[in-house]
Length: 471
Image (cartoon, rainbow, N blue to C red):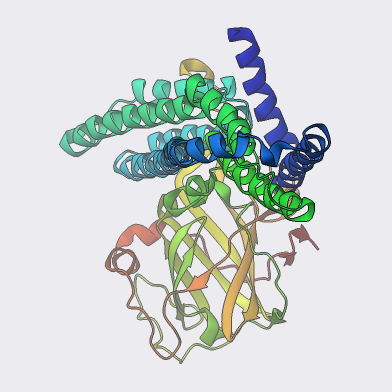
């Protein structure tokens, strides 16, 4: 019996995963309606005098009590599966929040340590979305996600915090990491859970008994068929709702992994979240008035761009005021992601320049290796070239960007000459009501952190088509 029930549950998951919700509704509801109509025709042919028998009298006596009991049972089951779906959505949101907070805590550590920690989190989040969400359709966990989580623990285990701030952040990070593991376990438990067998049996038997008791032999043939067909459609739809919601990670109506791609975690999905053309979008020339100010990138965080007279530098000279930037100005920008900086110039309606982040060098391939193996890994410069172009959408200017390692596509040692999409920017505020520059980014223009900024290129960089291929 237990094996039969387990097989039935696997079959239910398989049906939800293989067929669309509309197909399941049409087949299930339509099939039950046809069975009910066939039952009416058989009953009227086999028992033509049923209306004059005591069936109607007995059925009338049982109908009211049974309808109440069945309604209570069905309502309880629907409430249970709705709670399960709500719990699943809340658990995924909490898990994503814990991972995002853990990534934020990593900012307290040294650049090299922060890079390795975030790389491990990046791999874990991708394992969840790319592998575990598929495994949970069948109520299982992903070995790839388990291994990725273990790798995150290894990175924190090997961390050597320095100073009181890092010590406190290290303790907080370990606590957050344990919370991440707990939320994952809660999510997997929900994915593998099922309604109690007794409830499933009661609802199934209850539908059959309800249809029998609700049969009205005193009605005409057409009225009886219409009544029983509508009733079969209603009760089957209600039962189907419990089936669909009983498995919150299976089928089309399932819990989304979108929370794992938002907020701080958006930086792990620069390719997936890149600009997607929409109807009405217009490619326009990028103007100085479009570029100046504060921007937000889902992949790289907040960015502030300032223009300077040709040859001026942020450490020695004041930037131009709003609305005074020219086509031949030098531009500098700072963003929070790994203390990044950009420099460049406008040319031909595009902005082309160089970017640099901390640490100054990174492991070739960004592989998470341990000990001596990591120390022996070749190092490459954590800088390269990029390009931005402008798109006009509903009266607002968006900046669409791409980037590479190295100064041109032929010197991309890490990603095999690959152009990376996803450095897309949306304005903070409007041209008439600009948002003030964030204090921490404004301070980086004033102090000596710009010693690590790359030189503004005096010759045009290779032009990149930000439809994501080099030209």
